[in-house]
Length: 141
Picture 1 (cartoon, rainbow, N blue to C red):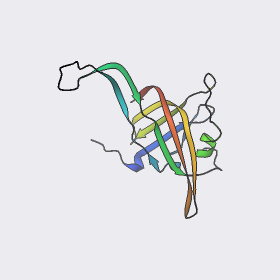
Picture 2: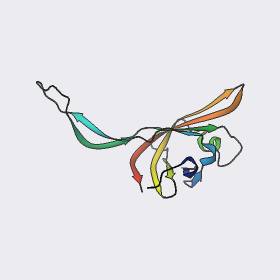
Picture 3: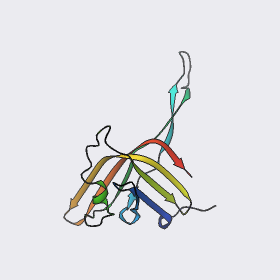
């Protein structure tokens, strides 16, 4: 069994032209990758326990990445996230987020940008946060 380690993780995100960009060196935190099946409650009157039934639909929770703010690199967070809100229906294109977990295992999904935040602190370096909304099927290989 091969365990995933921080130095083995690679994070890629499409630029405006649809080309994957390795943003690993700009990411210091990555929230949980949360994929879930949706269920409907199906317990009836008289049941003492909740019962559920899968409805054949799944979703992935928003993905949040953050790190040190950089507005100079063409492949940095500011170049990829700034100036994209609002995402307009019919004209906004999804961008692929791909996370490689130690060499071969990948999680890939199309996303829309929900939030791009820059946080200044007089005692620390400026940080950024980007929140991405997955849409459609998650591909895990």
